[in-house]
Length: 343
Image 1 (cartoon, rainbow, N blue to C red):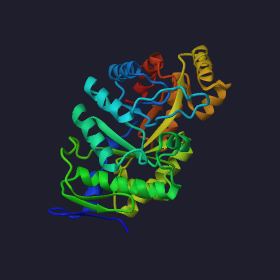
Image 2: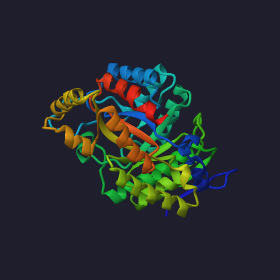
Image 3: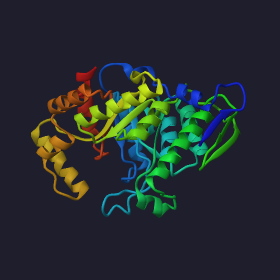
């Protein structure tokens, strides 16, 4: 059994964690909010990051998220570079003023929980309270093996994730805090400074399987499903609602979101031109009509219609996975022709 306790002055680690896991007020607001998500391991340079952050602020996107990977899983991508996720978030925090920033998601296998908690708090202070921490188990075995990170079986990775969540939330609460786990322990931890945000939002993601949903109900402000269909998103939302009810938490306080690849074209010719660029980037043939079925793809009207299906499924924020990350014009088209339909 894991245990987490306050050494003085509080009612126990788990209770404090649940309070700090409460969703921000916007979680229950109807409608769909928009963020941009970038795969940082795909040779995204610092100049690219600055341009993306500037575009997000200029166009009014709520947030800019990035993956936390050191290695691309694309064939032939071994020469691609990846700046560290939290170093990037801290740097962007210093040169932006409105856009929220975060990871989607940071593997629990990469960093000690005290280090990850401190990374997020540092970025929160640099940004003036605009940071969100996405956290997961880690999944790319080759990346772990290449960089020397342990990659145990999924059960162990879930155990480690659970311990990370305990320690991160405990370190953000008023301390001192004790926690003894199988993988990590802390003694009289009263990490300073605390986050500017109370709570600093934690995002979890996956398929809302039973254990992940239970952890989200205890610790998360938001749960993100990846590349799900509207029906799959609705089913995941139902499992998350049930997990919240079992935890004694109002399901409306756990926001449901979606990360999905997208392609947009002002018209059919513009769309097919981007499909051709995406096919070149991925190194495989792609069909525009197939992407309409499996991605969020099409003309602005078609994308609005597709997003209405996700809205009906309970999705309240969409992280648009922008794989052609230097294509700012695509973001401009989303901002001008899609976002206004949901505001």
